[in-house]
Image (cartoon, rainbow over all chains, first blue to last red):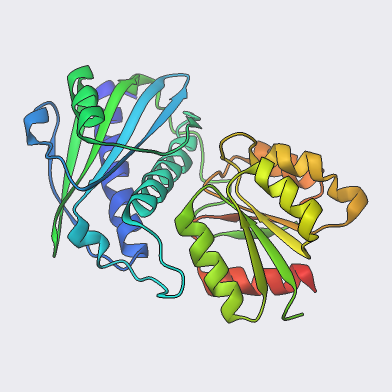
Length: 174
Length: 120
């Protein structure tokens, strides 16, 4: 696949995966614009998490930045509450899981790290390393951002076949 | 079946709370652990009727915990709950004796149904 096509496809995957992820949590989000290089557009948020990934052809970090007001929209059982930081870490983990599943179709298997909380300092460090892209999404309670940093060999993306593996929400009883 | 003790092993507080809440609403008792090491201790001490197990966790991942549980001998039912979809990982879990594989995010209603089937 031509690198520019691979890049465009990955961008579509990230945008659709993010929309799906928040939709599953009952939060409507819409992509704003793709900002490929200008990291000044990335604003720190109260709830930030990141997860590292690696594999042949891709190595980097995915970040998720969410305002507290958006977390307040998340449905919770009052008897079993969870914190915003726990939720944003789980969300970035699930976001990378969705991307990983989609990339399997394009012969780019990824290994996932563990989700980590991100503070202002680690966000700045990530931005100084250079981000490949920052994706912004509008919600009723403010903007969220997804950042992608690292190295990705877009030319390695090669469509293999229709999905032969499980996907989100599947329950397979052996 | 209600009242049976289900152990949820996941490093995500969000998942632990959501799954535990859904299972308790369905009448089960729940226990939680944050990784495979805590999970193994909990299995030994609490003897749950079933385990719901994440794959990617610190200290000891879910597949290593599954190997340590030796469920083919003990018969303890285990359902994996993970973002992973790789067939090779599913095959490893099946080979180790797991009862099934659930890909996050799973609807809590369907998860409770799966637990009922597996623990029955």
